[in-house]
Length: 354
Image (cartoon, rainbow, N blue to C red; front, side, top):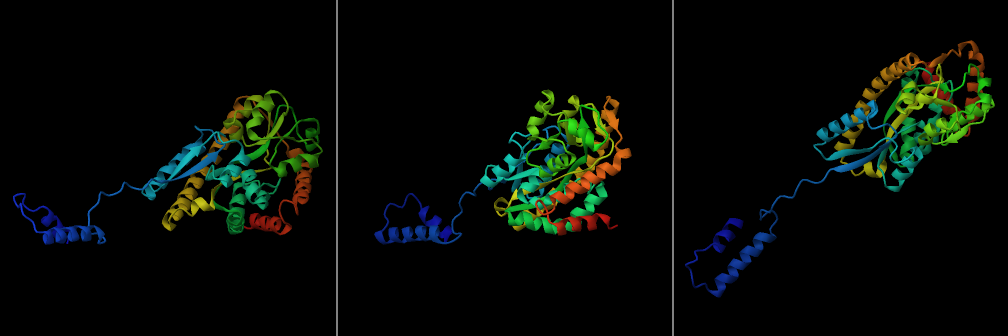
C-alpha cells in the first residue's frame, strides 16, 4: 500500500484536473500508509546510550588494580556490544568506603570495589573473613570464599546489593614507626584502626592498646603528625598509599589477608538484560582472578622492595603463642556481635578441609 500511495501522490505535474473524489481517495491512502504498522520507513533511531555503571574505589588511578579494572571495562563493553559500560572514580575521589556505600544506596554511585570494611557495612557477618589469625594463607581464603559464597551472596541480596566478585590486596601485617615484637609492645604505641572496622579495633583493644580511629584518606596525614604510628596493611597497600614513607618496621608474619570485593546496587543490576547481567558477573569474576594473581605477585614484590629500601623486618614468631592467644580472644569477643558462632565454625571447617 505504501508504494501505491507514493505513486499516486507523485502523479504527473501535468495533470491539472483532479476530481474531489480522487483527492479524497489519495488522502485516505496516505493516511492509511502512516497508520499501518511497519508501513512507513522512518529514519532509524540512534543506538541506545549504554547503561553506565559508576564504580568507586580507593585504589590509586595508576595502580595495577585500576589497570585490571579498565581491562574489565573493555571486555564488558565488547561482550555486551557497548550496551553496558563502567565509569571509574578511583583514588578515593568519592571519599572513604562508608561514603561509597552511602552514595550507592542514595543513587549517586552504582557500584564499588571495597575491602571487607565496606562489605561489612552491607553484610556485617562477612567481617568473619578478617577475624585475626583465622585466615592467613591464600588457599584458606579461596576455600572459605568458595564454600560460603552462596551464604554471603544471599546476605548482600537481602541488603539490596549484588556481589559481583571477591578480591584481595595482599597479606595483612603490622607496620610501625617504632620497634615491636610482641602484643604488649603495642600498648605504648598509637595503632590506627579504620573507624568503620570493628575487627582490628577489637584486636587492639584486646591487646590493651588504644586504637586511633580514622578513615583511610586520613592515615597519611596522621602518620605525618604522629597522631598514629602503627598501621595494619599489606606491603602492597603500604606502597600504593605511600604509608611506607613514614614507617620503619614491618612484621614478617601476617595475621590475615586483605579481603575485598565488588558490589553493585540491585536496582542498577536489574536495568540490564539477563544476558548482560551474566556478562557483567562473568567479566567481573575474570577480572578479579586476574587482579588476585597480580596482587599476590605485587605484594611479594612490594615486601621485598621495602626490605631493600631499609624497612626493618620484625620476626614475631618467637612470641607466636602470645599473638595467637590475642587473636583467639578477639575472635571470641566478636562472636555474637559481628558474626554468629555457626558462621565462624563454618569458616574454620572450610579452611581446614583439603
